[in-house]
Length: 529
Image 1 (cartoon, rainbow, N blue to C red):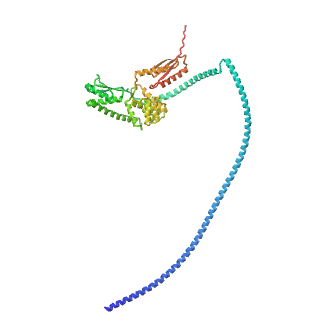
Image 2: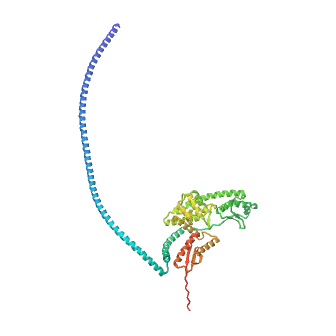
Image 3: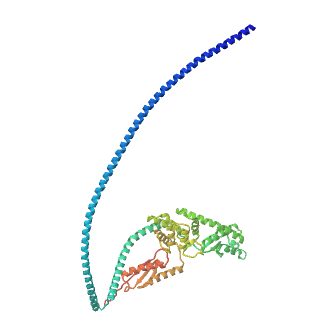
């Protein structure tokens, strides 16, 4: 076992020595090969570097040559451009020189002409001075002759120059007035023929398209009751119920012998409507005493105020209008409970709106503005009665306050000519207002005011010189003026008719139009014997 062990150890030692020797030999061989390879690589690298340097030199030379060629080309281009620019400038300078030479020649010619003209002018001035002296001398002589002649004429005519001038001027003025009146008559007659036809067509069409039924508003309302016993409950003990009702509503309650009816009387339609509805509710409820009356009246007033706003909105929808201020809408609703000469104000305003819109459409004007102006023309009548002033001006201020269109504002203020009309729509509103008020049955007028209007009409016509008699006929729609034939001729009669009509327009307010007829009658009497 020991021998084997030593043998193994020896073999192992020999193997280690052999391995060492073999490793050293291999390492020696590999080192030589690595050195050889390194040398070869260095040689190859040097050769490659030499080739790269040579190629770089060649490329550098090529680039240098190309750049030189590019610089030469650029220099040639610049040189050509410079030469071209120089040539152009030289050509321009030559042209300018030619123009200057031409202008110089022209100026020389003009100078010569001016010199010649100056000579001619000087010669002419001398001639003019001579002629002026001659004229002054002749003028002096003429004035002397005229003065002598005037003296002779004054002696012959026994009139001074001022008197003759005055007489001549009076004759000329009279002749001019006569000729002007005749010309005016002819122009007016022709205008009447043309304008009357068109106006009649437009007006008749508007009236036909807006024909409506009219009912005159009254100042009383009738409340039906079930039996006469209810009258006693309405009156109350010692009349306290009726007194409380009248105090709360501001309406007079008339309880008379009329069977099953109680009459409410008041000029204010809103109050009368509040009273009517309140009384009907009290009768239906059966509880009639002062506290209940005040409660019901207050509730009905609130409901009617809301109804006024709705009525205004419905009116605007009916007419196709929008953009109206909410306060103006309320005033429009109030028109339902206002009347003018018995004509309901809201119905009247709606009718005027339609009439104005129709006539505006025929004339090619803005129909929306026309309807708007027609609807609002009487809005001033809805303002508190404590505010004084013409309703047209009150409406003018109200519409202006709530930013209505300037044309609408002017039409509202000028429909009774309180202010000047600034647009044709204002005239249409005025015409539509007259048409609506003049419909048969549309309005009523107290007898006293009617008679007073006729008297004023006759007095205005009677105030003119040469008028003998005046007659207001056809309910004040026509005034006939009889003139003195020896003081008024036919031409003056035509002028007189226009002057009377103008004065009536200025001093009176009336619906529709008034026809002025001037009558001049000449009678020659002879007797056969």
